[in-house]
Image 1: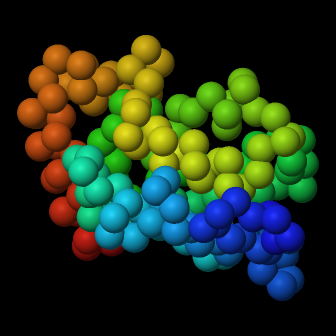
Image 2 (image 1 turned 120 degrees about the horizontal axis):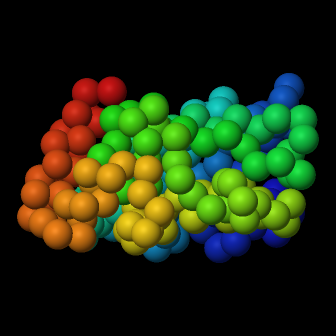
Length: 158
């Protein structure tokens, strides 16, 4: 990641702990104002909601924890900010295949962050962690958008 990062993405471990990373991105999947930003700081991440989505302008905090078994075991990833999304449990944990049964040691920080960003824009309603959010997303998009916008406003207070 440090020697050959994807365009617009950078990440590096902090000096005293290679399991904790700082990162920033600046491409369509993660850029500020025109998209979203993911910045890792000492296991904390912030996602700025991507433009032209119900999550636009939200500042959603996450925690990423890399255990010693990484990359053979996926990091733990959890939203700290309230999140109303079909694939996010009430605890903030994500239902994301690459963090569970489809994990591969070839996935790096950029792949993880890009997958989380993609999930915001394109939820998997066939495997919901939040059934209410999934049903609203499928059946009542206006109410779903309203509920997401409420969490966006709450995210500014975090």
